[in-house]
Length: 393
Length: 150
Image (cartoon, rainbow over all chains, first blue to last red; front, side, top):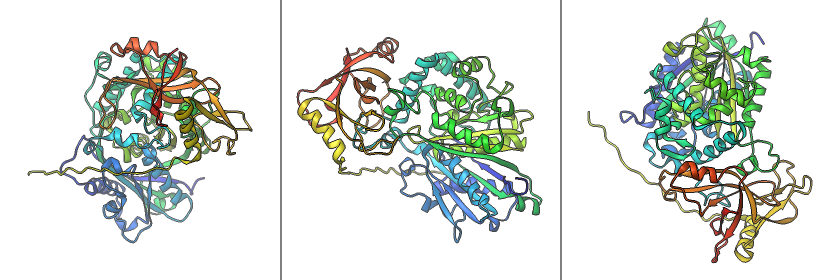
C-alpha cells in the first residue's frame, strides 16, 4: 500500500475541564482546530474538506450545532459533513476523514468538534431519551444503568469484583496525573473508589467518567501530499466499524449473538482493523491502546474485544498484575482515557489523537517508551456502534 | 473579567404512535394481565418485547406467544443516585427472560429491601427466579407490571 497511505499530520486537543466559562461552543471548536493547524504547519487553504464531530445535540443544548461550528472549522465553501455515532462519533469522524482521502477525492481533510457536557445539568435525562418510546423509555434507563447491567453480567460470567473495577480507576487516574490535557488528574486508591458513593450498583462515583468540556481536531493527508510537502506524519493502517442490535434484552437470554457482558461488535470492528493492518497476533504486535471505556468495568470487555488478553479471566488477572499500566506489557489508556475525560463529541477522537501522539513519540510524560504501533476505539449508542483504528509510526 | 451565563430549558411534547405490534402487546397487558412475545418462524425465537420483524433474519415475525409470568433474572442494577427527571432512589430494575421467551424484557424489581446494597445485589443475582406481577388497575403500559422474587 506504499504511496497510497493516509497519514495524520496535525493534532489539537484542549485541556479538558468541567466547564470552560471563558469560551462559547464555537470558541472551543476553534481551539482544537487552531492547535491542529499549528501542529500540521499548514496554511488553512490546504484543507479541502471538513468532517464535523458532534454527538447528540441535546448534550450541549444547541439544535444542529454543526451549523454554529461551520465558521469555527473554516467550513465556508468547503465540503462539510457532520458525523453522529454517539460516543463513537470522534473515531467515526476520523474514519470518515480517512475515507475521503483513501477514495482519492481529497488530499487534506480536517476533522474537528467540541463538547460542553459540564453545562448540561441533566445528561442522564438526555441519555434516557436514546431509548425507544414504544417500550423502554418508561424504564429509568441511562448509560450508567445500561453499563452497570453489563458489569453485573461480566461479574457473573468471568468473576470480576468491585475491587477489580476499582483497579482500573486507580490505574487510569495515575495515567491522567501525567497528562495535562486530562480532566480528572487526582490519584486515588482502591479504598477511595470502594468508599465512593454508589451510583448504580456495582458502579460507584469513582468508577464513572466526568462530564467534560473541550475541543479536539485532527488533520489527515494523503501520502502523496505528505511526501510532496515533506511533512511529518504517522499512518492509519487499519480502520473498522461494526454495530450490534439495539435491544439490550437481546444481548442476554437464550444464545444471544452479542452478549451484553462483552463488546461483541467491538471485537468484530477490531478484527476488520487488524486484517487491514496485517495484525495477526495483537498481544505481540500492539504496543499501546486507547480503548473507549467511560466506566471502569467497561475497560475489561474492551481489552477482551481488542484481543489484548487470551480470555476475560486472564484480562482480570493481568490487570491485577499491572500489565496494562505504563511500564507494563501493553499499556491501556496511558492518557487516563475516557474514564478521566469525557467530552462525548470528541472523546473517541481523543483516543485516536493519543495513539497518534504515542506512536509519534510525542505523548510527553505519559509516553509509552518505544511504541510504534497502537490501536484506538470508540463505543456509541446503547453500547451498539463501534469504531476502531490501527496507527503506526 | 466577569464571565456570564444564561439558563435554557428544553421542554418538548411528542405524541408517539406505538404501532400495531406494541399496541397489541399493551392491549394484552391491560385486558388480560399477560405478556406476549412474537415468534420468528424461521428461527423459532420468541422476541420479547415483540417486534414486527427479526433483526437476525430480517423476516416479519408471525405468531403471538404468551410468555411468563415466571422467568429468571438476566441483568439488574440498583440505583442509589438521584437523576433529574428519573425516579427517586433507591430502586432496582433490570432484565428478565420470561418462560417461553428467548430475549429478556426490562422491568422494575419490587419487594426487595435495598438498604444494604451488597445484600440486595445478592438477592438479585443473575439466574434468580422471579415472577411478573400485574397492577390491579392497568392502563396498557410498561409500568403495569414488575418483577418479584418467585
